Length: 128
Image (cartoon, rainbow, N blue to C red; front, side):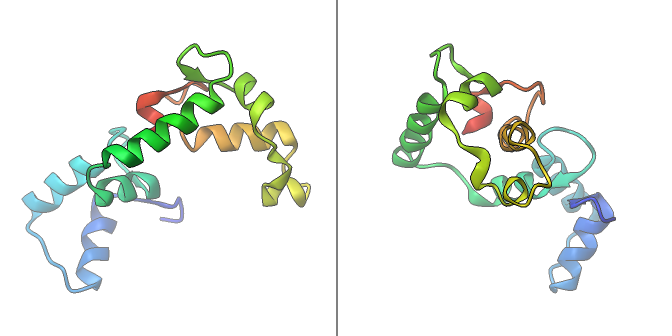
């Protein structure tokens, strides 16, 4: 569909193209499992999260350490204000090329983790 997401039909046909066929019930169960935000579409990130399986304790500790580093005011959330103090968006290709401003690059970076509420505030749950 060009939106970098899969609907049920695209998931079913994509799997079928690789020789993997499921019943309608199995496709529906799989789609519902992958569609974490219940948007009716499976994003690339949702697909990867669904495939990666459980996170090991060591990996989770590393992720939470990164979260704490980004959470500059230690309130348990990562916001644009936190990122402005910790992350340099000038290395983002779209910022380098001038397509995005540094502020837009920060918002784009934050949106990669702001996956549940999409409110500009990243919780630990979203970050992990």
